[in-house]
Image 1: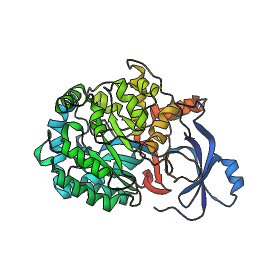
Image 2: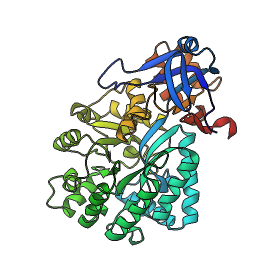
Image 3: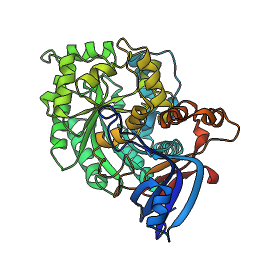
Length: 438
């Protein structure tokens, strides 16, 4: 459904983080009886409802009192070919890849199967309130193209790319460096900057990329303006050790990517659990973002993310579900997992509800270089938002009766919201999911 004409004011309880609550305790903004004024898919203002109603007395009002509005969720690490393998428990990372993941990813050589998976993937993202995502595509160019096309039809903001590898996986997933460059360039020309789509250069990880393939990544990243870069780093101790053996010249994992000039402001590195202090300092200096994926980290037994150390060093962090190593598409649940894990980390860190919202929204926009477009409700940005509607007589509705502060309300939403509480999701005020039409 396309955005209508004329000014619309959505009336609801509104939360967003136009600032960074890790740096500013006042970053969370809450309007108990709030209004979001929208015109042509763009935000005019976010304020108390009565203030906006006075400013635009002729606006159409959509009354959603009893519901909560947040910016659309932004998932900074998720794998589209892994939709159907969620929940394979009891494996370590490398065993899980070999026995569960890579056989499924090889099935996407069948384009008709890839189209089916792509459609499932984007529908499920939208149903969980995710409006933007950084997505690992497929090792097959037609399957990666199918993802972009499905995202375009769904109306989501998707950044993705052909997954590049030429060793230490299954042979049917390999490309030659020459084919990797040629197929990636074709996809870049088709999809980079096309509507709500962007392209990310995506080597799977250093373990599966030869030096020749990493050189291709460098050439691709320099081939067009605005491209993003994403990969894995320091996820498991076994992986880190194998990378050390493959690149004996490298003092640490990060230096492999640094040698090929792949780390910068538009780089997103998934996991980084087992990073040295020096690696964290260099990530911070280069302005890259680490995608924290708590559900996957626990499910695969990879370790507990050292958030306190990252925060101390000024490393930018956001959240990722890491489907299918993670346990679902829900960013609300992922934020709660992050909070719970940090309570028992070697160096505990208490994530406030404001920090959880920031990590799930604006931090992701900053990671994907979309912060001028989305991530909060600042005037001029796209109207990307989620409507959370607590069910009558639910645990959440009961808790909200006694929630007295904005932080308590938001904490209750993160703790007790279920998938069914996502009532509607819009991107630039276009409906990409509505429970009433499901």
